[in-house]
Amino acid sequence: MALVAARGTLLRAGVRLGTEAAACGRNGTRRSASHRVLVEPDAAAGIATIKFKNPPVNSLTLEFLTELIICLEKLENDKTFRGVILTSNSPGIFSAGLDLREMCGKNPAHYAEYWRAVQELWLKLYVSNMILVAAINGASPAGGCLMSLSCDYRVLADNPRYKVGLNETLLGIVAPFWFRDTLVNTIGHRASERALQLGLLFPPAEALQVGMVDQVVPEDQVHSTALSVITQWLAIPDHARQLTKSMMRKATTDNLIKQREADIQNFVSFISRDSIQKSLQMYIEKLKQKKS
Ligand SMILES: CC/C=C\C/C=C\CCC/C=C/CC(=O)SCCNC(=O)CCNC(=O)[C@H](O)C(C)(C)COP(=O)(O)OP(=O)(O)OC[C@H]1O[C@@H](n2cnc3c(N)ncnc32)[C@H](O)[C@@H]1OP(=O)(O)O
Figure 1 (tube, helix red, strand yellow):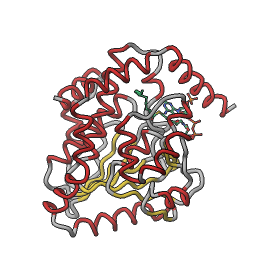
Figure 2 (cartoon, helix red, strand yellow):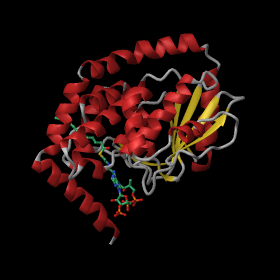
Figure 3 (cartoon, rainbow, N blue to C red):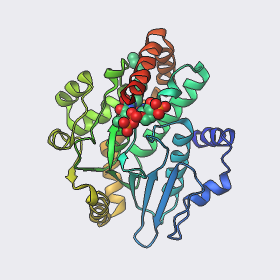
Figure 4 (cartoon, rainbow, N blue to C red):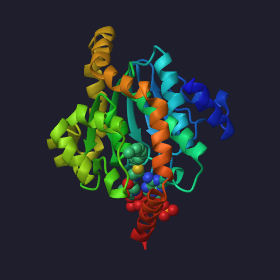
């Protein structure tokens, strides 16, 4: 059902499904029919690299989310691929998180469609049967950080500009319970409480110390490190690893699934508030002014 909804969005956005399917082909060549998601398949190794390509900052627009969801679903259903590396096609920015313009000045139906797609991406990532490794080659605030937290392993490039964290409170918004749960499952309750309230964005050394990432490596070694991690994980029998992953994570996703519609309604009413719209507009303005 979610895939049908996602396809509806893509069709409205003018993306042809035939070419979209080709984007996740497995003959070893890069296919780029999908505009915002590049897939580099290595069928022999059973690994695909997904590269985000949604300039300028890989923010999660509805179209980008939809392409990612469909791409992940296709890889999930193709038994050739057992492992996926998520990275950015534009080193410097992994992902700026949710697209602020999707949450500003739109109508409730749009907010609901958008939030359903955000939920869907998280559900696809968090309990994927595949081994997911985030090769974080740039800044990764909020929703960008959530994507990497939803992977099985995180490798961060050692650059002080590449901060990671859930900074929602700095925007005057609140990370929903399933963002919180994903963080708590990764770094524990006390560290999450502090990080979430203060909206902390951690530079690499601190991110490693608190457990937001598993490894920090020189920038030019992020992809090769992710590959060698995935190769180690591939040595574990799939059925045992998948059941273990499910045992660790399913309660967290079930919690959202059982209150998915209520979570959408919460989001719509929260984001539609005048005060929240004002906060978001001010934040967008601040980003603009930073440039001048
Ligand atoms: C009770 C509770 C109930 C329900 C709760 C419900 C919901 C609330 C929770 C919603 C969850 C939200 C999670 C999110 O992901 S919010 C998004 C947070 N993201 C950020 O804070 C990142 C902001 N961006 C940056 O910090 C920098 O842009 C970045 C470090 C990523 C890159 O810096 P750089 O200097 O390289 O680029 P900029 O010049 O800043 O930006 C270039 C242009 O891109 C635009 N931009 C940046 N980020 C975003 C974004 N997230 N969405 C849309 N657009 C973005 C920026 O404005 C520039 O645009 P132009 O000026 O060129 O037009």
